[in-house]
Image (cartoon, rainbow, N blue to C red; front, side, top):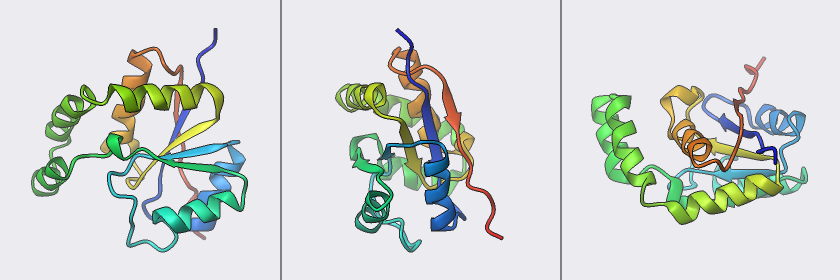
Length: 152
Protein backbone atom coordinates (compact mmCIF):
# COMPACT_ATOMS: atom_id res chain seq x y z
CA UNK A 1 0.00 0.00 0.00
CA UNK A 2 1.36 3.39 -1.00
CA UNK A 3 0.88 6.12 1.56
CA UNK A 4 -0.59 9.39 0.35
CA UNK A 5 1.39 12.59 -0.05
CA UNK A 6 0.41 15.32 2.39
CA UNK A 7 0.72 18.93 1.33
CA UNK A 8 0.94 22.05 3.49
CA UNK A 9 0.50 25.75 2.76
CA UNK A 10 0.66 29.01 4.71
CA UNK A 11 -1.27 32.11 3.70
CA UNK A 12 1.03 34.79 5.16
CA UNK A 13 1.40 37.59 2.57
CA UNK A 14 -0.65 35.51 0.09
CA UNK A 15 -3.21 37.08 -2.20
CA UNK A 16 -6.42 35.05 -1.79
CA UNK A 17 -6.86 34.39 -5.52
CA UNK A 18 -3.24 33.22 -5.84
CA UNK A 19 -3.68 31.06 -2.73
CA UNK A 20 -6.78 29.38 -4.18
CA UNK A 21 -5.09 28.96 -7.57
CA UNK A 22 -2.14 27.24 -5.86
CA UNK A 23 -4.52 24.73 -4.26
CA UNK A 24 -6.23 24.10 -7.60
CA UNK A 25 -2.91 23.69 -9.44
CA UNK A 26 -1.89 20.97 -7.00
CA UNK A 27 -5.18 19.10 -7.19
CA UNK A 28 -6.18 19.70 -3.57
CA UNK A 29 -9.61 18.25 -2.77
CA UNK A 30 -9.64 19.07 0.97
CA UNK A 31 -8.05 21.93 2.89
CA UNK A 32 -7.57 21.06 6.56
CA UNK A 33 -7.30 24.15 8.72
CA UNK A 34 -4.87 23.55 11.60
CA UNK A 35 -5.34 26.94 13.26
CA UNK A 36 -6.67 26.77 16.81
CA UNK A 37 -8.95 29.70 15.98
CA UNK A 38 -10.03 29.79 12.33
CA UNK A 39 -10.13 33.58 12.25
CA UNK A 40 -7.90 36.00 10.45
CA UNK A 41 -7.36 39.71 10.12
CA UNK A 42 -6.63 38.94 6.47
CA UNK A 43 -9.75 39.27 4.37
CA UNK A 44 -11.04 35.97 3.04
CA UNK A 45 -9.07 33.71 5.38
CA UNK A 46 -11.57 33.34 8.23
CA UNK A 47 -13.43 30.03 8.44
CA UNK A 48 -16.75 30.99 6.81
CA UNK A 49 -15.34 33.13 3.99
CA UNK A 50 -12.55 30.66 3.23
CA UNK A 51 -14.91 27.68 3.28
CA UNK A 52 -17.21 29.45 0.83
CA UNK A 53 -14.37 30.43 -1.52
CA UNK A 54 -13.08 26.85 -1.47
CA UNK A 55 -16.55 25.39 -2.10
CA UNK A 56 -16.90 27.61 -5.17
CA UNK A 57 -13.80 25.84 -6.53
CA UNK A 58 -14.90 22.35 -5.55
CA UNK A 59 -12.46 22.08 -2.63
CA UNK A 60 -13.64 20.84 0.75
CA UNK A 61 -12.82 22.51 4.06
CA UNK A 62 -12.32 20.92 7.47
CA UNK A 63 -11.24 22.74 10.64
CA UNK A 64 -9.31 20.47 13.01
CA UNK A 65 -9.11 22.82 15.97
CA UNK A 66 -7.53 20.13 18.17
CA UNK A 67 -4.37 20.36 16.05
CA UNK A 68 -4.04 24.11 16.53
CA UNK A 69 -1.29 25.56 18.68
CA UNK A 70 -2.66 26.06 22.20
CA UNK A 71 -2.95 29.74 23.21
CA UNK A 72 -0.35 29.40 25.99
CA UNK A 73 2.24 28.13 23.49
CA UNK A 74 1.39 30.87 20.96
CA UNK A 75 1.82 33.54 23.65
CA UNK A 76 5.13 32.05 24.79
CA UNK A 77 6.37 31.97 21.18
CA UNK A 78 5.32 35.59 20.53
CA UNK A 79 7.43 36.63 23.52
CA UNK A 80 10.46 34.40 22.96
CA UNK A 81 10.50 33.79 19.17
CA UNK A 82 12.13 30.47 20.14
CA UNK A 83 10.76 27.86 17.73
CA UNK A 84 12.60 25.03 19.52
CA UNK A 85 10.65 25.89 22.68
CA UNK A 86 7.37 25.97 20.74
CA UNK A 87 8.29 22.66 19.10
CA UNK A 88 8.84 20.92 22.45
CA UNK A 89 5.54 22.23 23.82
CA UNK A 90 3.65 21.40 20.64
CA UNK A 91 5.01 17.83 20.53
CA UNK A 92 3.66 17.37 24.07
CA UNK A 93 0.29 18.72 22.85
CA UNK A 94 0.30 16.40 19.80
CA UNK A 95 0.93 13.42 22.08
CA UNK A 96 -2.59 14.04 23.48
CA UNK A 97 -4.27 14.38 20.06
CA UNK A 98 -4.33 10.80 18.82
CA UNK A 99 -7.96 10.99 17.71
CA UNK A 100 -7.43 14.14 15.62
CA UNK A 101 -4.23 12.72 14.09
CA UNK A 102 -6.02 9.47 13.19
CA UNK A 103 -8.86 11.48 11.63
CA UNK A 104 -6.38 13.53 9.60
CA UNK A 105 -4.59 10.36 8.48
CA UNK A 106 -7.90 8.85 7.35
CA UNK A 107 -8.78 12.03 5.45
CA UNK A 108 -5.37 12.02 3.75
CA UNK A 109 -5.90 8.38 2.71
CA UNK A 110 -9.00 9.25 0.69
CA UNK A 111 -8.52 12.90 -0.33
CA UNK A 112 -5.70 15.09 -1.64
CA UNK A 113 -5.21 16.99 1.62
CA UNK A 114 -3.40 20.24 2.25
CA UNK A 115 -2.79 21.50 5.79
CA UNK A 116 -3.40 25.23 6.27
CA UNK A 117 -1.85 27.64 8.71
CA UNK A 118 -0.68 31.24 8.63
CA UNK A 119 3.13 31.17 8.39
CA UNK A 120 4.58 31.14 4.88
CA UNK A 121 7.70 29.29 6.07
CA UNK A 122 6.76 25.72 7.05
CA UNK A 123 9.95 25.44 9.14
CA UNK A 124 8.51 28.14 11.43
CA UNK A 125 5.04 26.63 11.63
CA UNK A 126 3.40 23.85 13.62
CA UNK A 127 1.92 22.36 10.41
CA UNK A 128 5.35 20.91 9.63
CA UNK A 129 5.32 19.24 13.06
CA UNK A 130 1.88 17.74 12.37
CA UNK A 131 3.08 16.45 9.00
CA UNK A 132 6.19 14.91 10.54
CA UNK A 133 4.11 13.22 13.27
CA UNK A 134 1.78 11.73 10.64
CA UNK A 135 4.82 10.34 8.82
CA UNK A 136 6.20 8.80 12.03
CA UNK A 137 2.80 7.22 12.71
CA UNK A 138 2.81 5.76 9.18
CA UNK A 139 -0.37 7.63 8.23
CA UNK A 140 1.11 9.59 5.31
CA UNK A 141 4.09 9.18 3.00
CA UNK A 142 5.84 12.17 1.51
CA UNK A 143 5.19 15.73 2.66
CA UNK A 144 5.30 18.61 0.21
CA UNK A 145 5.28 22.21 1.40
CA UNK A 146 3.61 24.49 -1.14
CA UNK A 147 4.25 28.21 -1.54
CA UNK A 148 1.97 30.84 -3.02
CA UNK A 149 3.75 32.81 -5.75
CA UNK A 150 4.37 36.46 -4.81
CA UNK A 151 1.60 38.88 -5.77
CA UNK A 152 2.55 40.85 -8.86
